[in-house]
Length: 240
Length: 186
Image (cartoon, rainbow over all chains, first blue to last red; front, side):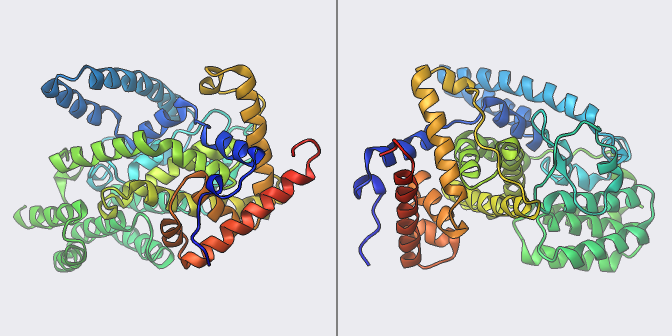
């Protein structure tokens, strides 16, 4: 078979080229990017670092970019606040409170930020399985919903684990983790789940198994920040 | 129990590195991800959410993403999320609603006629892509619209390069046929 060349170099008509070019010219609304930055929770920390970089480099262009992004993030923050006010799940409030387990804030980009997902006006993310409370409490006038994959389900599953940890129900937490890991063998949140397992085991007083779990993860993912996090948890508990 | 669990702040230089890398990924690749999701069939009303989800998933796997391969990785996630979205639409027997008539801010900054033409062209392209088998659509979007190379598309789709070539060519034929069937388009 001959080498695959771009259509533009391989006999595309003007109409066909116009179709391709119109697609490539499309840009998302800037608010969508800002909302994603807000959801990831990377806006202000990254900005601080960028500002430092700009200062050392003395680059006016970089500063201009920082100012522009700051304006965008201002919008994202407002959007985030509005979104938070529309979320009625008690889990969300709980995990941002003082009893929030440490694993939920580890690394700044852990499972918790999925709760900060900020949908655009008029759109709703649906958790399709065992979160009837959240779904049922949505606004009556909400538009038709759409499933957006398994990540939301994973987040909800680990929320139940965190609730149990916060209530010091370590056996319940471990049971919920067993169910999570049975369902999501290679889930997107598997590292967080392992951190929570180590916490639960330590909370139950099972230090040996907690250490073994942490060591097993560390052996498989030696560079992962979750590995150092788990090792720290085990070490701190031993020193406590 | 571990009393300090709830209070100890965790902010390290590696956290800041992560944040910066995530920030750069969003800045550099958000447009491509968002556009790719649209062309891959995510409805307009949900594309912002889906793009957000792509980056959330990527943030989980940040340590595994090789530097320089971010765009490819992100579009790979987008493929999966778009596939789920299409399946969800089919389960509900919903027909995706095409582009809205209004112009976005970026489009408004161009000549109004061209922006409107672009809008119409994209609506037409969406309707053509919606009528394509998924495997042709994915190959076409990645190769012709997002400009990945053939070997890159092959790796992303997990198929041989020859299969990518075949799918892209069949997709082109489908586009050509659909255009020819529209009065006044050719």
